[in-house]
Amino acid sequence: MKSHRAATSTSGNTTSGWLEAAGCVTAIGALSLLYAIGHRLGAHPIAFILHAMLVSAIATLMVVGAGTQAVAIVRHPMSWVVGLGMILLEILYFQTLTYVPPAHGNVMLRVGIPISMVAGWLMLRRPTPPLAVVGAVVVGGAIVLLVGVTSPDVRWPMAIVGTLAAVFMVVRGFAAEFHPWNRSASTVQDKLRVTGLVLLVTSILSLALASAAAAAMALDILPPSRLVPTAAQLLHWPTFLLGGLLGGAIYTLMMYLNFASVVKITTESLTAMMAFSPATAWLFQELGATFGLIDAPAPGPAVVVAIVVCIAAVLLIFWAGVQARQQRARGDAAGCPAG
Image 1 (tube, rainbow, N blue to C red):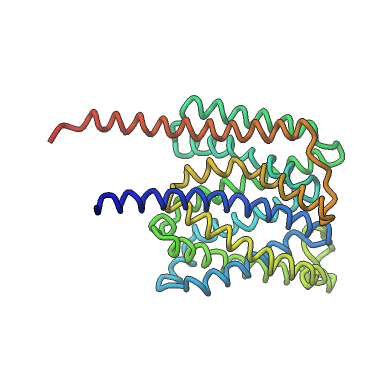
Image 2 (cartoon, rainbow, N blue to C red):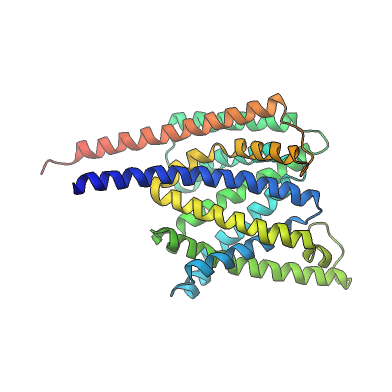
């Protein structure tokens, strides 16, 4: 009876884990639409993201608490790498969507897949299954196609900013992997606590620096720059509403669903589900255009092909990883002496 209950519980956790992974990917689509709306309303990327991150961090810590190791966590150098990586990823993704619609921009971020594989091999000498290499090459080909069909007016800005966003996505991933407190966190609450603390300190520092730069520009100490938000842009009320309230809420939900699915079905399974994020971005793009929230044409045939190819390639990479782990497990079992 106990065995049956345990099996039922495990099955239930797996099912809920996959549902939470699907919810996380859906939240990414909603966030992409929100970024596009923010762009249409004139929100500055840095102001929008910093408001969203700060609200999300505060909301998260109000729920899970700061814990007894808060000072040690925020003082660890890797915390700043993780936090700034998260912030810069979102700022650059927001900026990417000022050039192209959500589905298009989300596909561009898939360039992080081959970048991650190359970085893992160069820095850690991580072996990559041959089929996973094939999948990464296919993703690279889809990205080349995507850049090629992008309007010449925004092609290279989109490609550069989107690639930078993917780079910081990889940096965030590796930094989180080697963050000692993040590695030791085994529950959703612990993972949320670490991330909330990291986001709180980095978003406060970033907002303080942005405010100081805005004040310096207002006093003619620094020359005006489009890269830095002005005081008016930092206090822009649609940015407060969209970024601070809606953006913060969606980002908090996305973090919870991310960690909940990781704990139940592992990071690899969540990564497989993430393959569908360009599709959810496309879905929310269509909803936004239908209700007049954004002005975004439907993806052209080449963009649709890039979406489908990237999904298939990521699933191939996931399958290759599963096969490689199973082969290693069989080899380890064969090498263990009986008894």
